Length: 58
Image (cartoon, rainbow, N blue to C red; front, side):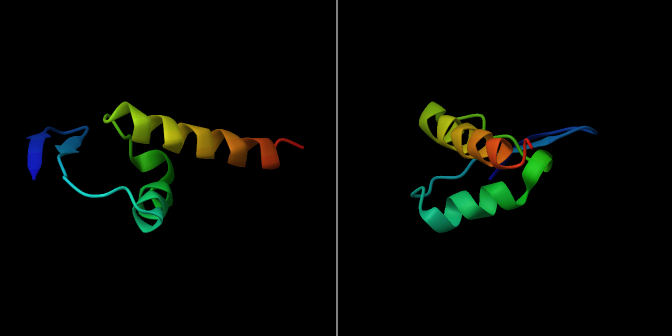
């Protein structure tokens, strides 16, 4: 469901189980997406991104 939209962004709201496929879908959008809530999913995405960053630092 689209909750809010303007020129810079659109906010969607979904009620789904956070499966591995879901997390991969979120990560596939790279810097074009931000998880706002719940905090647990936001933190999981951030942790995964940080791990990926560590792999490519050198």
